[in-house]
Length: 257
Length: 228
Ligand SMILES: Nc1ncnc2c1ncn2[C@@H]1O[C@H](COP(=O)(O)OP(=O)(O)O)[C@@H](O)[C@H]1O
Ligand SMILES: [Mg+2]
Image (cartoon, rainbow over all chains, first blue to last red):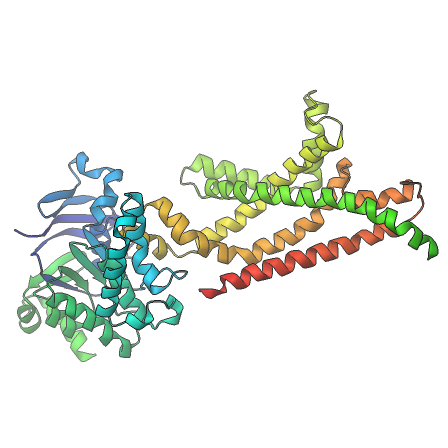
């Protein structure tokens, strides 16, 4: 059974329909790359999955639970959103670390507040601190835990942002162009961390303009164009033998760069 | 000169009493206007049109009219127009009226600074908190607030330094603050009359007070320098 099923997601801003019925599924441990030119609706799709935008139509199902169904009022309660969005994690293009906290505090803040709310903080804080430190080893920043974001490079900040998302144990981790704000020499270190996550069978949706990476890390690729999924397939198929004219043109433009 | 030296202890004694009123008004205004300003800021940011528009109108009126007139209205309106002199006639009544006028006035100025501060924190900060499962309240207190404070300390400092001097306006309803106390020596106070130097001497109090306030605020600004 799929861990994520997205059916017919639509989203309109004003009178522009940005998502015109997006449907796909994702297997547990699968990695989905989403490519497409700027303005095709990739960010909006991730924001819908993370409940930062509410779709105008469609169904989102995670692990068999219908999290969102536009036609089922029971799934639309504001009070449930917080619990539902924890199925997803989101790593932003611009990192969005909290500047007043150290890297370690950035990673610990959300679970700490959550545990304090549930009165489990005292019992769990040691375990949480251990887990945070392990994550810093994993992202290769064990020696920078106590630095503030402005003392870290963009690549380091983005790796901290990944650890901050991971500590909430999302079922599906989403990345929105995680390297687009980085200097070219810093993208590698971030992609390496994401690559390692895929080896550990982390379920991920990765929006990216790094075509080589999109092909290598994913077991499924979606090409979006004008708010629809224009083509979908396994990476070697979609990149090696695209069927749609628009996909070909898009990939050709990238190859020329 | 000799006369001044003779008068000095008496004058300083009287000015100190006046200065305590100044200080009290200063402190009460800040204590009241800091939280009230935040509530007004939330009002002006409200997505409910009627709330944001009413709040905006109120802010516009308060910032668009002199504090001195607001003082006079707050002090005289209940007694003269409503025939219900809620403030009483004494110094404590005048202090209450002055406090109310100052708190309202400064809340409105602070609220505009708060509003700018809230809006200047990038939405990405709030969204990062949301996707981590934090509540709006947690995000405000644990993410937005300190960043907002950092941004508003410089403009708030300007207002606070203005407030130090604005307290003198309370003399218009005969609040016995320091300028009132200094001026009293012209008309006869503690058997001294026709002396203008005590009035001038009050400036010294303001200078020292403002110096202390400025140093403290600069210290706070430096304390928040550890992040960007
Ligand atoms: N909040 C919004 N209000 C209005 N239009 C929006 C908003 N968010 C995105 N859009 C529009 O939706 C379209 C798709 O945007 P986006 O999802 O960011 O595309 P992508 O991430 O693929 O570049 C763009 O034309 C953009 O201007
Ligand atoms: Mg985008």
